Length: 79
Image 1: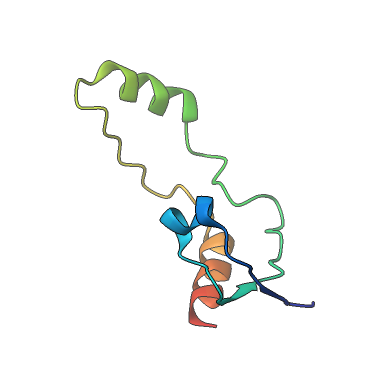
Image 2 (image 1 turned 90 degrees about the horizontal axis):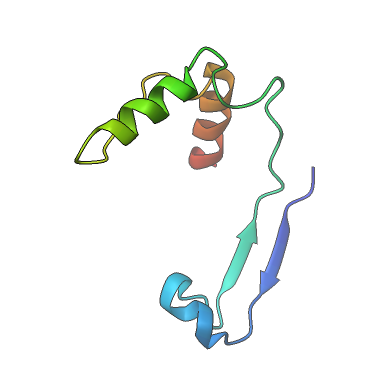
């Protein structure tokens, strides 16, 4: 696994979003989650139907990510 480091040159169009002018940017190599990150038991069509039928357009999704994906995400954030 190799992490990559970049030095960014001024990019006015990205400054609004990322503020990366003259700063080091660390790009994590990342690892794929075996079997995918999204829980296959989540009924995406039912969730979409529920979302579209609500006036406020807000949807809570429990157990969206598989436990393996959450573990990898946690390890990445603690790195």
